[in-house]
Length: 230
Image (cartoon, rainbow, N blue to C red; front, top):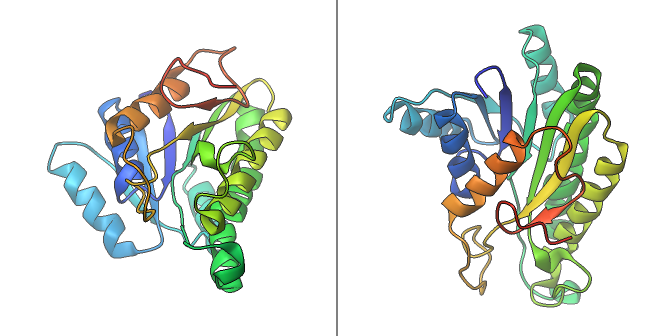
């Protein structure tokens, strides 16, 4: 991992930060993407206190121009992203008919279209170089048969993110893979969610996917490393 660069959205806290920590321990170059520059710098400082290196990158995933600016900034510095982890998330609550449509659209903008724009910009370079790993942090309840009704307004965007994972995996080529890892919704701040896997377990699963040699899982959904669900 020493020669790899990883961009982690939502990397300043929660599961995103846990992933950043584990990747930094593998001597991966870590780019912490966050919409709040102060949070990004705080995360960098926290890693630095453990002698781990990272760089904060300001990206507003709801803003297409912000995503493009980050991409061209990295390109201008000759930084190629080998690993893209989408751990950022916005989680509205309540039933669909009782929720604010604008809030739900905002969640889709970050959770799905932000991920799509990132893939659109970074995946072609991965394919051209012959290596890349894309991992989406999602949940089984985003599946049509996985309990969409539990937090409908939240699961709407996760269901779309799961579908995006499959679409991107189908377009991957060479040693480029696109997978999803199910994270603990309680840890991600979803009210009423039941605690499950720890942040460290989820992060370890992401790292396992990233480090997996050519021919590994693609278009798969995992709860823990080595246990592909489908």
